[in-house]
Length: 285
Image: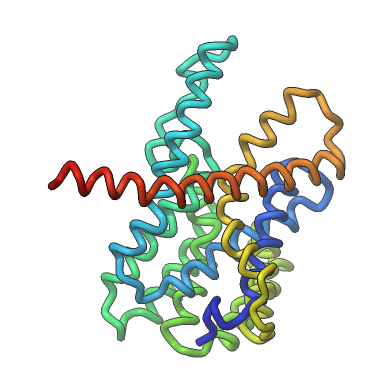
């Protein structure tokens, strides 16, 4: 099984994926292709997180979700206080599952999927993953469920593919097969989101079969890609207030500022964590 520490290609894909999602959210041409990066993130997260201790998964996924939910909650409350927006128009019931910003749904979804997979007996894993992936795809194409369930359904096949890759130990074969099936479905009557899943499978397959030695750039891309993803909506919202034309330069500026914010938050958190732990230790003593 390939690991992120061994293969820089995975980290490059994660960095490119974070940039692609910013491109999609800005609304530039071919954004429907760029959004494939989200399914790629889900697939790779399910693959590399397979078999991990559920407590560690909770700390890795839910702690950032809670922190960033608090950040976006404060920003939205400030916006309500300073603008004509209302509390009822800003906050919705589905945010109990996603957090106050819709893009945060990715983190609790991956955790819940990992928790579900961890309860399955090993011998039932392949049929459960394949069956639920097919069912989710069909339901997604046949219904129009409210948020975030429509998002969960759209990427559930990718999550199942990632877990199946790890469970079978045949990552490249399963990933390529998944991409091929989705490619065929993209030309069928039930083609909604099939192209995006196909592209996610192809990108992930490249990460499985193409090995690149780890470099400093790759390590940094992997380290900050999640932060870029989590920070970019507030960056875009801030830039929009300046009435800038939404073009390539707007996109480039959003990427740069999101990266800077991600680095600042990462460095700040790294410095504050030991201080908080030391303070907590002194209080406990």
